[in-house]
Length: 180
Image (cartoon, rainbow, N blue to C red):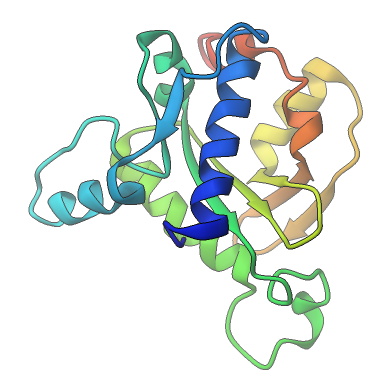
Protein backbone atom coordinates (compact mmCIF):
# COMPACT_ATOMS: atom_id res chain seq x y z
CA UNK A 1 0.00 0.00 0.00
CA UNK A 2 1.29 3.46 -0.75
CA UNK A 3 2.38 5.44 2.28
CA UNK A 4 1.79 8.84 0.73
CA UNK A 5 -1.28 10.57 -0.63
CA UNK A 6 -4.60 8.75 -0.58
CA UNK A 7 -3.18 5.55 0.90
CA UNK A 8 -1.68 7.21 3.97
CA UNK A 9 -4.79 9.35 4.43
CA UNK A 10 -6.96 6.22 4.25
CA UNK A 11 -4.76 4.43 6.81
CA UNK A 12 -4.98 7.37 9.25
CA UNK A 13 -8.75 7.64 8.74
CA UNK A 14 -9.32 3.93 9.38
CA UNK A 15 -7.12 3.99 12.49
CA UNK A 16 -9.18 6.87 13.87
CA UNK A 17 -12.47 5.12 13.00
CA UNK A 18 -11.31 1.90 14.66
CA UNK A 19 -10.22 3.89 17.74
CA UNK A 20 -13.57 5.66 18.01
CA UNK A 21 -15.36 2.33 17.52
CA UNK A 22 -13.26 0.59 20.18
CA UNK A 23 -13.80 3.40 22.72
CA UNK A 24 -17.46 3.93 21.86
CA UNK A 25 -16.80 7.38 20.46
CA UNK A 26 -14.55 8.67 23.23
CA UNK A 27 -11.06 8.54 21.67
CA UNK A 28 -9.53 8.53 18.21
CA UNK A 29 -5.96 7.66 19.24
CA UNK A 30 -5.96 4.00 20.33
CA UNK A 31 -4.87 2.44 17.02
CA UNK A 32 -2.29 3.72 14.53
CA UNK A 33 -0.26 2.66 11.51
CA UNK A 34 2.53 0.16 12.06
CA UNK A 35 6.06 1.11 11.16
CA UNK A 36 6.49 0.63 7.42
CA UNK A 37 2.99 -0.93 7.14
CA UNK A 38 4.31 -4.11 8.72
CA UNK A 39 7.38 -4.41 6.51
CA UNK A 40 9.76 -4.21 9.50
CA UNK A 41 8.09 -7.23 11.10
CA UNK A 42 8.20 -9.13 7.79
CA UNK A 43 11.89 -8.38 7.24
CA UNK A 44 12.84 -9.30 10.81
CA UNK A 45 10.63 -12.40 10.64
CA UNK A 46 12.72 -13.72 7.75
CA UNK A 47 15.62 -13.68 10.20
CA UNK A 48 13.47 -15.50 12.81
CA UNK A 49 13.29 -12.35 14.94
CA UNK A 50 9.86 -11.44 16.30
CA UNK A 51 8.76 -7.81 16.28
CA UNK A 52 5.84 -7.55 18.67
CA UNK A 53 2.68 -5.86 17.40
CA UNK A 54 4.30 -4.72 14.17
CA UNK A 55 2.57 -7.13 11.79
CA UNK A 56 -0.09 -5.83 9.45
CA UNK A 57 -0.97 -2.20 8.83
CA UNK A 58 -2.57 -1.36 12.20
CA UNK A 59 -1.31 -1.68 15.76
CA UNK A 60 -2.32 -0.23 19.12
CA UNK A 61 -0.62 2.76 20.71
CA UNK A 62 -2.72 2.59 23.86
CA UNK A 63 -2.88 -0.73 25.76
CA UNK A 64 -6.69 -0.66 25.78
CA UNK A 65 -6.52 -1.64 22.09
CA UNK A 66 -4.35 -4.71 22.72
CA UNK A 67 -7.24 -7.25 22.79
CA UNK A 68 -8.32 -6.28 19.27
CA UNK A 69 -4.78 -6.44 17.86
CA UNK A 70 -4.15 -9.71 19.75
CA UNK A 71 -7.17 -11.17 17.92
CA UNK A 72 -6.83 -9.59 14.46
CA UNK A 73 -4.19 -8.90 11.87
CA UNK A 74 -5.46 -5.86 9.99
CA UNK A 75 -4.42 -4.97 6.45
CA UNK A 76 -5.56 -1.79 4.68
CA UNK A 77 -5.88 -1.37 0.91
CA UNK A 78 -6.88 1.76 -1.00
CA UNK A 79 -7.54 2.26 -4.71
CA UNK A 80 -7.31 -0.74 -7.07
CA UNK A 81 -10.38 0.42 -9.00
CA UNK A 82 -10.67 -2.33 -11.63
CA UNK A 83 -8.89 -5.23 -10.04
CA UNK A 84 -11.28 -6.16 -7.23
CA UNK A 85 -14.54 -6.38 -9.09
CA UNK A 86 -16.67 -9.47 -8.57
CA UNK A 87 -16.38 -10.00 -12.34
CA UNK A 88 -12.68 -10.61 -11.76
CA UNK A 89 -13.77 -14.08 -10.64
CA UNK A 90 -15.07 -14.78 -14.14
CA UNK A 91 -13.03 -12.91 -16.69
CA UNK A 92 -9.52 -12.28 -15.35
CA UNK A 93 -6.91 -13.49 -17.83
CA UNK A 94 -5.12 -15.76 -15.35
CA UNK A 95 -3.92 -16.01 -11.80
CA UNK A 96 -5.75 -15.25 -8.58
CA UNK A 97 -8.31 -12.56 -7.95
CA UNK A 98 -6.63 -9.61 -6.19
CA UNK A 99 -8.79 -10.10 -3.05
CA UNK A 100 -7.51 -13.68 -2.83
CA UNK A 101 -3.91 -12.54 -3.38
CA UNK A 102 -4.31 -10.03 -0.54
CA UNK A 103 -5.90 -12.72 1.60
CA UNK A 104 -3.14 -15.28 1.06
CA UNK A 105 -0.40 -12.79 1.97
CA UNK A 106 -2.26 -11.46 5.03
CA UNK A 107 -3.13 -14.99 6.18
CA UNK A 108 0.55 -15.95 6.12
CA UNK A 109 1.39 -12.93 8.24
CA UNK A 110 -1.51 -13.68 10.60
CA UNK A 111 -0.20 -17.19 11.19
CA UNK A 112 3.33 -15.90 11.77
CA UNK A 113 2.08 -13.28 14.24
CA UNK A 114 -0.07 -15.81 16.14
CA UNK A 115 -3.38 -13.99 15.72
CA UNK A 116 -6.73 -15.67 15.27
CA UNK A 117 -8.37 -13.57 12.55
CA UNK A 118 -7.39 -11.67 9.41
CA UNK A 119 -9.29 -8.53 8.45
CA UNK A 120 -8.62 -6.64 5.25
CA UNK A 121 -10.27 -3.22 5.05
CA UNK A 122 -10.29 -1.92 1.49
CA UNK A 123 -11.76 0.99 -0.38
CA UNK A 124 -12.13 1.46 -4.10
CA UNK A 125 -12.19 5.00 -5.50
CA UNK A 126 -15.55 6.71 -4.94
CA UNK A 127 -16.93 3.68 -3.07
CA UNK A 128 -17.61 2.75 0.55
CA UNK A 129 -14.90 0.93 2.51
CA UNK A 130 -15.47 -2.80 2.93
CA UNK A 131 -14.10 -5.56 5.16
CA UNK A 132 -12.82 -8.89 3.86
CA UNK A 133 -12.81 -11.69 6.43
CA UNK A 134 -12.94 -15.47 6.50
CA UNK A 135 -16.32 -17.16 6.36
CA UNK A 136 -15.83 -18.70 9.82
CA UNK A 137 -15.43 -15.28 11.44
CA UNK A 138 -18.43 -13.98 9.51
CA UNK A 139 -20.58 -16.91 10.69
CA UNK A 140 -19.71 -16.19 14.31
CA UNK A 141 -20.56 -12.51 13.84
CA UNK A 142 -23.83 -13.44 12.11
CA UNK A 143 -24.74 -15.78 14.97
CA UNK A 144 -24.25 -12.93 17.44
CA UNK A 145 -25.70 -10.06 15.42
CA UNK A 146 -28.22 -11.59 13.01
CA UNK A 147 -28.33 -11.90 9.24
CA UNK A 148 -26.07 -9.45 7.44
CA UNK A 149 -25.67 -8.19 3.90
CA UNK A 150 -22.58 -9.80 2.46
CA UNK A 151 -20.88 -11.34 -0.52
CA UNK A 152 -19.36 -14.79 -0.17
CA UNK A 153 -16.30 -15.63 -2.23
CA UNK A 154 -15.28 -19.23 -2.53
CA UNK A 155 -11.59 -19.73 -3.12
CA UNK A 156 -9.15 -21.99 -1.26
CA UNK A 157 -10.73 -20.44 1.81
CA UNK A 158 -14.30 -19.18 2.00
CA UNK A 159 -14.16 -15.41 2.30
CA UNK A 160 -16.81 -12.82 3.02
CA UNK A 161 -17.06 -9.09 2.24
CA UNK A 162 -19.20 -6.66 4.25
CA UNK A 163 -19.36 -2.87 4.44
CA UNK A 164 -17.06 -1.26 7.01
CA UNK A 165 -20.00 0.78 8.30
CA UNK A 166 -21.72 -2.46 9.33
CA UNK A 167 -18.53 -3.88 10.86
CA UNK A 168 -18.25 -0.80 13.07
CA UNK A 169 -21.62 -1.72 14.63
CA UNK A 170 -20.14 -4.90 16.07
CA UNK A 171 -19.49 -4.55 19.76
CA UNK A 172 -15.84 -4.85 20.72
CA UNK A 173 -16.61 -7.67 23.17
CA UNK A 174 -16.68 -10.06 20.19
CA UNK A 175 -12.92 -9.74 20.03
CA UNK A 176 -12.38 -10.22 23.74
CA UNK A 177 -14.65 -13.23 24.34
CA UNK A 178 -12.52 -16.29 25.05
CA UNK A 179 -12.68 -18.84 22.26
CA UNK A 180 -13.88 -16.44 19.57
